[in-house]
Image (cartoon, rainbow, N blue to C red; front, side):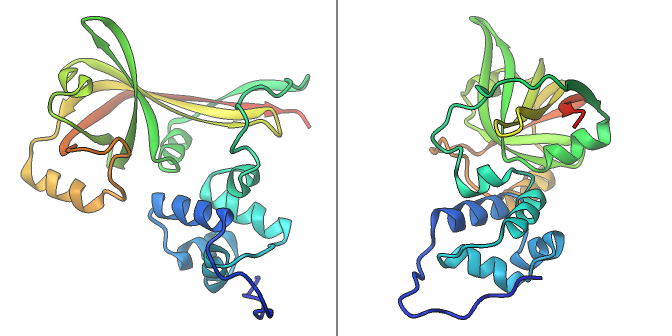
Length: 225
């Protein structure tokens, strides 16, 4: 279990890109440094060190931390930051594997941004939203006059995915159900307290919506070797 190395003379103490990505992903998942350390078999103080200092962790450490965060090592260190995802060459040993509902719900809890698909008077619309899984529901905040709010009472779909260009693999999860506004005061209070971040779009977005899935499906690209 790695522990923080002794500080060297002239060592950088500011947060690096690796540290920022690690901290942002950990916060999005609602994990403390100690919890992430337990899940990745890395000392919690070393997680803090990685977030706050320039460090060169061993590849094994990066793999365990990335796996506990539900992302790839390339996502964690930023290798893919400036690349267009999905352009890797397909492998010959590839197959699609269906995910059961338990796996789909577990994967839903690893992300903080997804795509909401709704029908409007102008046709279908797909909207990126910051979301929170609350019990059986997928919840998010929007403005009262938004396209998403106007779709209350209709069937909608919600999708997340993960693409790994290094292995030419990935997975996706799709949830379908009715979209509705959250109006119960106790539920609103709980959601406000549980929300880990403000919507990235900014502005007054205090109108909570929920999608209660009646169908959840998922697929993963797998390789024979």
